[in-house]
Amino acid sequence: MKIPLPLRYATVSAVLLAFSGCATTRTETASASSATIISNSHWRLTRLGDETIDNPANGREIQFAMEYQDKRIAGYAGCNRFFGHYEMNGDAIKFDQIGSTKMFCEGRMDVEQKFLSTLGEAARWKINEGTLQLFDANGRAIAAFEGNSG
Image (cartoon, rainbow, N blue to C red; front, side, top):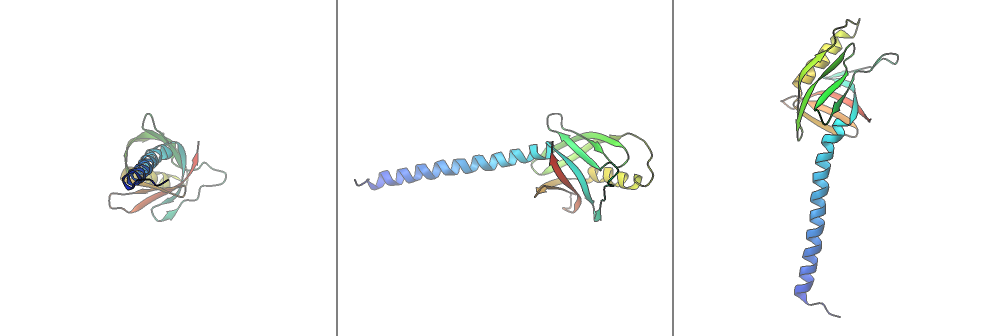
């Protein structure tokens, strides 16, 4: 049976349109899921500027988690617990209203202060192979974190 040429073009067009619609849906889903990935994971600090951060084996890790619904961030900054709010729009991110408890710890206060200050400088984010990177407004990498779900 020979299919008329206009019908063949119509069939091919319909198939291509269906596949392009699926591709758009996947891309939109990937973008939406990126925001929930960053918000539904715990992030452990591994780099702060050019400095590698060693989280002591017998100590608490510098880490945070973000709540997607309330746009809140909370975690441990090296000595004290911290908390605040965040806003995300695409790859743009802003942390604000950051506060913390006020205990003194020998040897970790300088890292804690630098970490909390760095959150205030963050302007963009990217996740690559399970690593969250924060960038300042000039595009300079200012912090890196390893993630785990939960």
